[in-house]
View 1 (cartoon, rainbow, N blue to C red):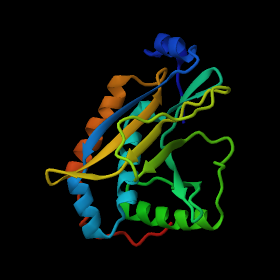
View 2 (cartoon, helix red, strand yellow; view 1 turned 30 degrees about the vertical axis):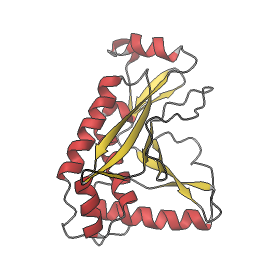
View 3 (cartoon, helix red, strand yellow; view 1 turned 30 degrees about the horizontal axis):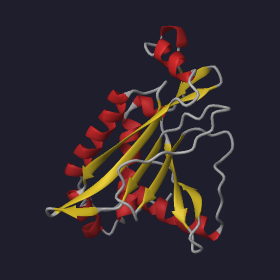
View 4 (cartoon, helix red, strand yellow; view 1 turned 135 degrees about the horizontal axis):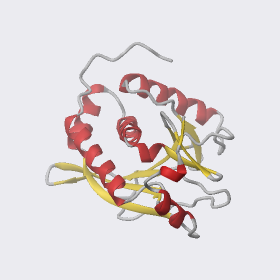
Length: 218
């Protein structure tokens, strides 16, 4: 973990301006062509949920601003952040679940499958106290949305990014997915969110899940 030198941080004035607002978050939604990822998931046996969850987690970890968090009067930067996501229960409510991120998608998918089973057996709405090395992630498979907003704590300030995707829709033989990204404007701008969308689209266009799956299960 790195502590940002606030006095020499290029974003210092931007951070102070937006951190003083009542609601400093902003959200951008766009459509992503996931045709290749959709096909690769079907061929590999990796669920589409796990494939998208891995992809958005991978890209978020590639962008420093998505790993930065506000702690009191400081800004810190994690080396790695991990997805904490919602899971639908048998009662049509939801619980929270998390997966330790790793770059091997086979290991990540296996971890996710086991974590979801544990969460359904013992549903909870609690993340581990004191941790902020999360990405808060949701899926909304019933709606091909064009806008999303999320509740956030403002005292103390919540600076964890929110990422949500919606219903997959076939358009002219392409599979299109709506994707929403919400961030604290003190830590990231439209440039950084735009970079996220750009990198994620590139990843889904090039992803190859045909490689042999790892037998690691940790």
